[in-house]
Image (tube, rainbow, N blue to C red):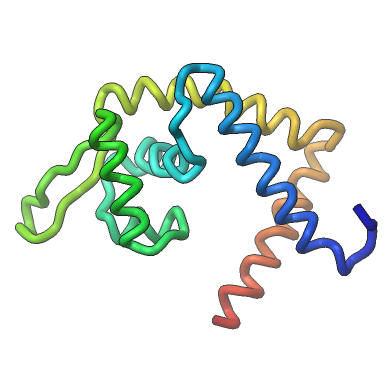
Length: 146
């Protein structure tokens, strides 16, 4: 790929695709052939937040609510997550991991470690921090302009 500033967005897109392919390949090796990277992201978010509304989950995975609903329904069908009604609002439901979903998260921790080791191979701790700061600045540039 051409190495200049104008190719940075293309390179970011390529890295995104490559990391998603890496995750899908590693999940497939472990018997999870029908998982999309968005499924993994949902399970990851639920492992951090314990339970979430569909709206909050949609925001965290950067998908619209209808897409998130389709993804979550598949995970419910496969037994990885469950819906629980809210005690305070009968119209609202929370999504949370089942025991199977929690076990899946333990498996994916190893895959995530492999991904990060590959991603940051050859980087010093300072370079990792700088890189993250740059990415956050870029993200903030877009979020403040919308």
